Length: 197
Length: 197
DNA sequence: AGCTGTCATTAGACCGGTCGTCTACGAACG
DNA sequence: CGTTCGTAGACGACCGGTCTAATGACAGCT
Image 1 (cartoon, rainbow over the protein chains, first blue to last red):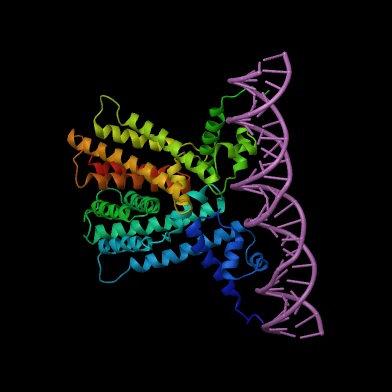
Image 2 (cartoon, rainbow over the protein chains, first blue to last red):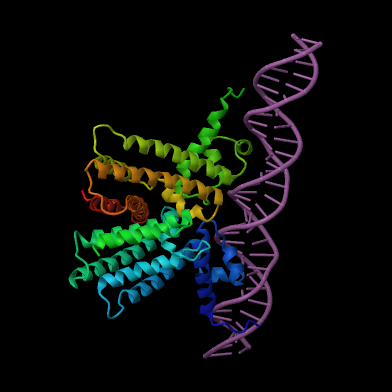
């Protein structure tokens, strides 16, 4: 009498819950059981949907980036704003997402990047593809800002985009280590400086 | 007839070996046994030298930073160079340390920062203290560069120091994810830009 | 020299949790 | 009515960190 859940729910629940748990505890430190019992799904179901923990992790990260990029696209296409403003809005939302006091900081790329990169090749490739797309969008935004005159582009747009992403990634790690948002404030200041605004 | 090894060797061997293994596989993914058997020390000995895996991890990171800061001090005090040159030499050596093809990238702060920060409070505090000292040194170097005229200081030195460290941290994570040194090149370019040189 | 007390070090048992497998049941739908 | 999809959870093999009990080396004393 399991109330006939439409199949996708279980799978989606697993992915969604795992994202939260991974973002908090990392990948290796979390057992499948923890995710399972947290969702209330028995172990048997897991291997119906996923072939292994690694494949599961891959799916979690894939889903994360899909969602992340969609959100990012939305912020970077706000009508009636110049590109520089849109860029700063993106970073402001990044800052906000880390600010969840406890210890969340929901950015999976930050949390899992270093841990997973030399642990599982498939997961690494998903991370690579995802971060590349993020930098692509930043680059386009920077070029846009140069064109609409909201930022005086000095130097290569690609390099600047990469550096900005790296800066914010590092700032997020430091925020975790210091349990402070100061690092994100520094990043904000320097971001303005780099964009010349 | 155990050839009477002086006690400290075992302990030092464990710390040193663990540093290498942690830098490669992370913290949670590595079992004590792996370190032990890699050094050739029996399991029983471990808890003679350390009270727990966490205390061990703490000691590993502490040792790492001691060494790292000593190296950094040396680079940043090269005689006959202006401060801007010293700074760039430091970042060049950072780049070089990541370049070990395989997957090393021996920077423990980068590898373990995100993973460990919300896993163990003691380890987090060691990371916090260590990274703070690194930024302190960067700040002093930046102020030095402003004073000796090798870099036109624009803006707060502290903020710039923090941003530089974050930038390079993020660049190292990206290097892991993309298995490329490109990110470190971008970081180099932007570092020059931020220092105005 | 022999005996003994003390301490550093080791051996290995212990229990709990890990991932993944496998069989059996139920519910849905043709 | 039977095949498919999904649930259920016991099970095995293994590995994790921890702890107690035994071993060894050595110092001092008689």
